[in-house]
Length: 203
Image 1 (cartoon, rainbow, N blue to C red):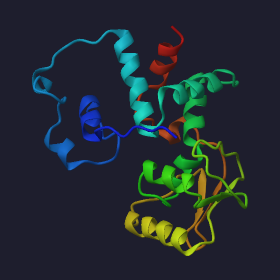
Image 2: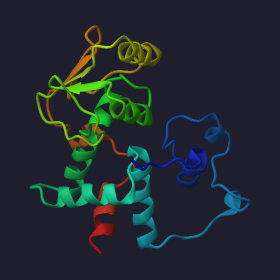
Image 3: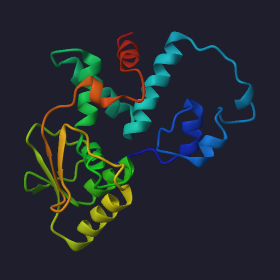
Image 4: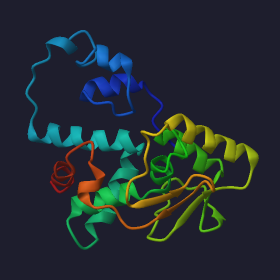
């Protein structure tokens, strides 16, 4: 499946945010990439601002444009605030939940674990990162030594500071997690303005 494989620090510097996780290089150079990055004072139009917010979400969750557009259209059909529905769809993707549970250190790593068949949902192996999880779904590592070692290494390297969100329940010993409920807008703390994305697509 297609995914972004370009320079990550450059993207983070463009937005001034650690899109792909903490970066010492980004901390040292907190300005845009390129020779004109430090001097850039260009004002952005409303369209450009909406595009930037969309791109932040895309890179953060590892989606291509067609995939992200599909998330928006799915949220549009749901009852409730479109922006919040979009965030809930993104957060309850299987790869994102695997990351939140601490079974992987990064979202790309979580995506790879799912793709390579290391994860089961409700007792069945699932290899689709975008698989939509529901309340009471059980996520666990398959019963293979290599898969368990990979997950344990991620849990141990995460340390005590890495805690699963309240809407998930984690059993570290069993390498298993459960979706207790759908997260609320306040619990998600998005990296970008979801309302700007909704306005961008509704033009």
